[in-house]
Length: 179
Length: 179
Length: 179
Image (tube, rainbow over all chains, first blue to last red; front, side, top):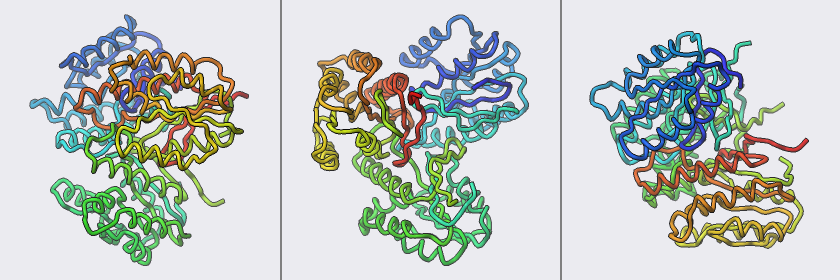
């Protein structure tokens, strides 16, 4: 798939190769490239994952880190490069739900309003699908699942392209490439 | 996708836009339309979801509610309109498994036997895919997952079309549209 | 899909019809056919599932059972028939993680190195996608989910064809059929 200005959603399960595919997409576009990271390194597992991702990307990326105010950070990131990769929405939603200082739904609206506008550069957004298992017994997990699913629908609706990852294989399910 | 007489399965995860897509499909067909609801409003979350769905549909639908005897209810519903939307199989299976008065497998057979016959009108069936997470530790959850998966396979086999929902985007994976 | 020499990955959720589809693929190829089973019948549920699968296959298959050393067993199996069905990777990874005697990552490398070579016969590999639910709270479940996802990506990368199962419907997402 050839990248073009607009929003490109890459969605799939855990360990489905979303980040790697999103990076490959970004690398088809000229530098400078901006990596917008949403993870908080709260535990060892996450810290190791962040470090592994950073090592893989190497020095060809400018990194912007923002766990909560993603819309603001995206505005900044867009001014720093020719392409932005947001990795990932799921971590950002997790951070918002676990924080007492933010209204997750309001932050999602900020992001979607920004992304729904015409874009001058490609913005690649990575998100997890988490709704294909058994209904979780935990109420917070159900809220998270609902918020994730509804946010993914909004992102897919405004995106120019949507790619569904199956074991590392990109399956394009929406292709709004301009003629 | 243009709707035609036969069974149309809409399958996907939680919050993947299944119900909304199924309603849009039904609205391409002339009224009267019948909504066959299987939910039991046992808790606040479910009651709110049912109310939200009902509000979205508005007054253009005739509603039939049946949490257990879905085959019988479908026979009735078919006589009331030009198109029937069954929403959803997953709630119905949950009701059956939690009840002591029904044999879930037998009820599934009743439904599938009815749906396997030639249909005079379109029947849209909504169901959840729940088998793409980790094996649940809870035995009832495993039984439910097995029953859901096997029922979904039977429904997909007899259906004229099967649509897989990805973040609100319909992906047609079986298209038996008559020539 | 017409089968040809090479690796054919069939992936999907629980009860999505993976094994049945894989068997149908194998039956398009001339006997003798080898079924390489990885399950350990540790509990009643699994024992019943194994028995049901065996009954369905009938006597037209040679069965090789190996819960741990899959690469070695595959070498043997390849010499016994015209087509091999490995069912399934997920059970094998479970066995490895629950055993103290094996390094799961090393066994995965053995298997992938073997499968990455040119094959004289079709090798059909069945695997579960388990990463599309909520993050499991249990650390072993998270490790298993990570290992499964990464292994599935490796298998999909080296495979000639990859088929994603949706409620029993095969969706070919990679098709490297030779011209």
